[in-house]
Length: 370
Image (tube, rainbow, N blue to C red):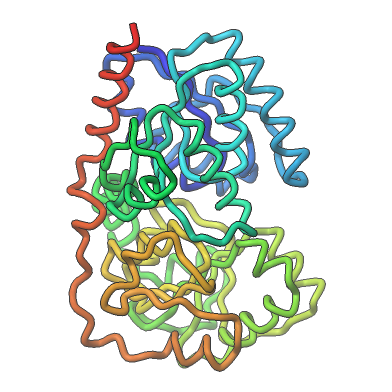
């Protein structure tokens, strides 16, 4: 079977590595990288360390306004579909790359296979929510990571082609966690990793004695009032905050002239180092859906700087807490007592065989459609 896969952002690279390794053993995959994430740390490094095959096409779209970015992707993907004539288009998640791939395939009546179907935050102001809803309603196979996702689709009248698979990100963690620990903990402590990134050694802290923070959503980074509250909250925490930061967000902070003492800003990190940093932290603070879930699967408490989450399973037993952007609320929730949390119930995200279920379902679909 021949399919075309569209990817363009960090979480998609991680999921694609697990899928491509298995699918390509007996099938053909054409990989299209839209270039939505375009700097080295968020793209080439991930391809290298995850052993993801090099893209057959790189669109180099880069950062643009939503409409312009999607339009450019749509135009280029359509050209590739005419050339390659795949039997299906595989899409991940909820990015602009996902939506562009879905629109291009749908217009040419090519079946769409959507991994991470059925997720809903029920906040239609979010571009991600718009992207995932449209993609789900155009898809032939909808691969749901949780039972909640299956139920969401049922409420929208979608049941045909809906398959509960578990979460492919869980497969990725099982596949890469040991590699991460061996790479970064062999004669090397967390301090050295951070110091090497910083090229400084004046911030002393210990494993399990720091918060790991990631902030990337436009609703937080583009709103300077919100961003200021977040950064000032981090600076008043009772532990050091380690924060991998996108160059764009770093530029915004520089223009705002915010001075901090309790935050260690580091350049964007690869997936293996990110797993390591999560696993050695005492808590994760994030607005990322994927990082919420990684924290949960690695038994780390999480505070999510949003009013809603598509990963409602992580909220059980207080492993994850939703947090409005108010300084006192952020500090109180991050510093909450998590010593007595029960071990997270990972089975809600499957049994670690999601990739196999997805590959077999796609091959079966291809055989039935002949």
